[in-house]
Image (cartoon, rainbow, N blue to C red; front, side, top):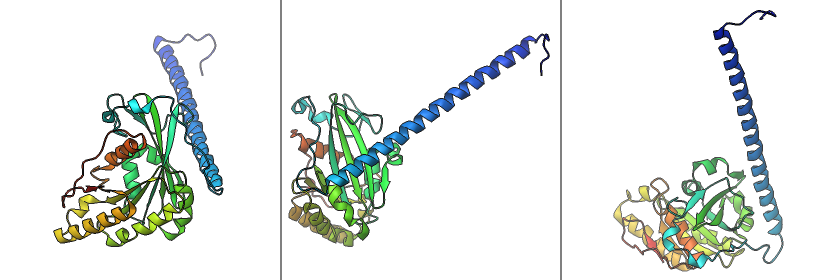
Length: 291
């Protein structure tokens, strides 16, 4: 303790001043950390209550709500600027710091398919690791958001990833109701998951007759290691199922980001009637795109 009247040396004064600055900095850091924790909690609760509200609305027949529409003329957007999720030029992307009530359109996308086929990895590749850490996880259902800007117009994809086990079937109605696109997925290296896609599609159509159907084969990087005759068999069967579903077929790989962003770009172009189309590719050994 410093006695009253005792003069401090220059070094002592500098040391005390440094301690004061460090203490002040620590207080600022603690205050900022507290603000971030509160913000994250509030955001989680907003998403949770939004999920509960959608669950309640799903119990009523007919359309439960309309998507918020942009005041801008989306028909003027250039197709070159809708590379969803890839920030370039006039396109910016964020997964979190965005006011969902602002001048934006929110679009719901459902993902269905068996367990362990790579659905969640596919979504995480698109939305990013940071958003995946903040996703709303419930038993048999994951909710993730992806927000991007096209020529200054903000679009939000609300992605509903339904678990593939039998107990998750009760989430299909709420996940599919009012969705603008339904992605039915299977593992390209597992014939049994391919055989399940028509069942998932039929379940989805009970609750939504208008959503854009897309059939997606995952794990293309493993698929190309299979014997060529087996690849041909799977390609033929997948194309037949896609035709029965009147769906566009994509082969993808989350590991190597093959066709992941292209699929969401395709959805955006279809929804806003933009003159952009994917190139058909039926070459066995390459990522199939068929429509």
